[in-house]
Image 1 (cartoon, rainbow, N blue to C red):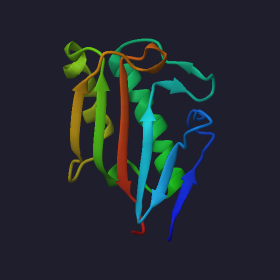
Image 2: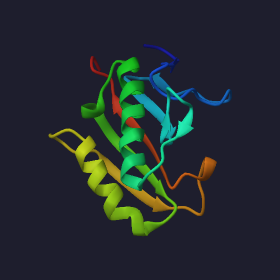
Image 3: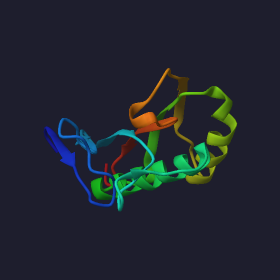
Image 4: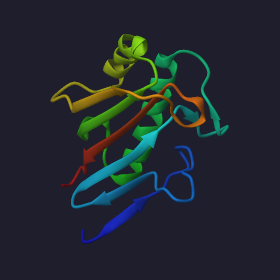
Length: 131
């Protein structure tokens, strides 16, 4: 598929006007940095970093499905935490959401702050099902 194609699904939070939820290019789908926003309410999920991580993976899964991919095809994950004391809790939720098989490569870094006061943000890159 030449060029790039934007991905948009109502099953994930609507992106800001300057962003796409995802972009398909050269057999890969690139998913934006996702926050724990419930697409049905447009509000951030309350609770722990694990609760937010689970919501983020529901959002990422919806975007990947709309693009013709899935969580099983993720090859690279970038995670941003505002407090590394949340690393273990986030990691436990992360492990529940990543399917068996070859695990993606991953980076997890601490940042000073994230949009909308979030304490976790996750972005990923995945292969398309037919790539």
